[in-house]
Amino acid sequence: MSLTDSSPGQIAKAASLASTSLATLSSNDRNDALIAIHQSLSQAKDTILAANAKDLELASEAAADGRLSQSVLKRLDLGRPGKWEDMLQGILDVRDLPDPVGKVTLKKLLDDGLILERVSCPIGVLLIIFEARSEVIANIAALAIKSANAAILKGRIFFLPYPAEETKNLLGGKESTASFHAISIAISRALTTTAVPNAAIQLVTARDVVASLLECDKHIDLVIPRGSNELVSYIKSNTRIPVLGHADGLCTIYLHFDADLESSVRILLDSKLGYPAACNSVETLLVHEAALDTHLPAIASGLLEQGCSLRCDSTSKAALQRSLTVEKAALLQDSVDADYDTEFLSPILAIKTVVPPAGASDDIALSLAIAHINSHSSHHTDAILTSSTPLAAKFKASVGSACVFVNTSTRMADGMRFGFGTEVGISTNKIHARGPVGLEGLCIYKYVITGRGQTAGDYGGVDGKKWKHEDLALP
Image (cartoon, rainbow, N blue to C red; front, side, top):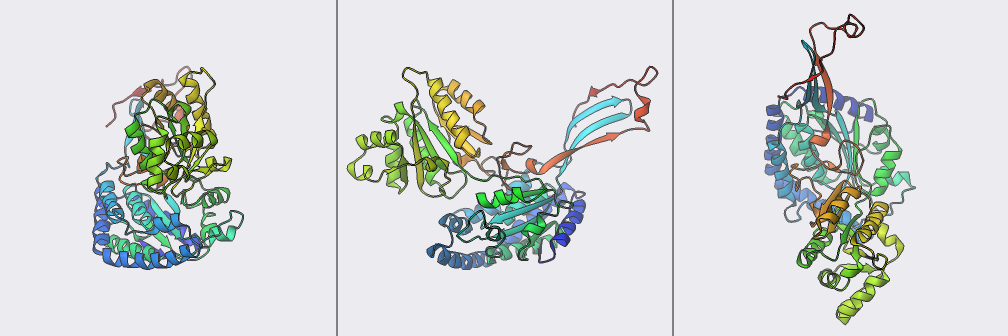
């Protein structure tokens, strides 16, 4: 891995050349590089965490002044319980996954001595632009090397205000932090002992290069933004390179009246308060009106006790005022329409009642919830809590999000929890990779034909050869 302040063109070209070399390495060579990275990061733990502590000190001052959001501050903290360990374990988990490169997924006998294969291969060069998350460097390095992709990383911390119309704020912000440098140096030291070219993973330190990198479509094959809605939207509007990512994590849970009460309470507490700053944290709770008195009070009570603010529509607020203590009822807030389109990234939950017409079936109520989700959700992760198998089946089929869950927390939307080792990000695009994007999402495929001198002109016509087109067993 290299820290570089070269020009964007030079950076992209070096990555492209490195990707060609990386694609020829064996699975063992790439796995050995991951072991070396894990060992180097482990040995550099004290140095990296010390650098992270300095970043946190500066970031905390910015947060106290209102120049940095609390959600960004939390994401920057590598010392949060379990975060360092998860980062290192993710590298080993990726190493232990099957090699995604060179897998034959289709094999046909076109004719005797003429075989067609569809073979998985790396995308090529990835450009990852990320905000605040120091561990992203290790995550991306592991996934890129395992999938034989080169990666260019540009990490920044953006200070408030952050208006979407001000391009300078999207391209500006604080340069790479001490944490980024410390992690990159450890990875670079590791790669010098392996067959992986150092230029295969590059951390860009130069200022004001994002716009120019986005123009390098000749050498960069995919852009993966990890950050705010404004950043993702800007990148999508200012490059010809394909973009994989999501703008918001506006996740919704629909609570049907037949859901198990104890499970519902646990799921809501985890989804909202497990890590409120995460993009898979729930932001909106839709409640069937028949669950207002049976389920919502226990859920609301648990959330309020842990400091969560509840923004309720008039129907749910009235129900809670009847059942909660006076002290807790006084904490309830009135929702506004904008709350149901907001990614709070903090201990705030918007609650809306699903009111079907009198005498309507459960299916009608579910349809109303689905309509709300498909209109207001960011299509990241949405869930239903119900004991009805038919309702769960309809929910899974009708909600158009990347992750659709039944009776579990939205926080399950995570590459590590999916068994992917780690992830480069979450994709809400309707393309080959959706949801948590791990190794498979970083591979495409090529068609390979092996023949014995045949030509297209040999086939067709009255006297031409005939195609066999027989499916062959996969290796």
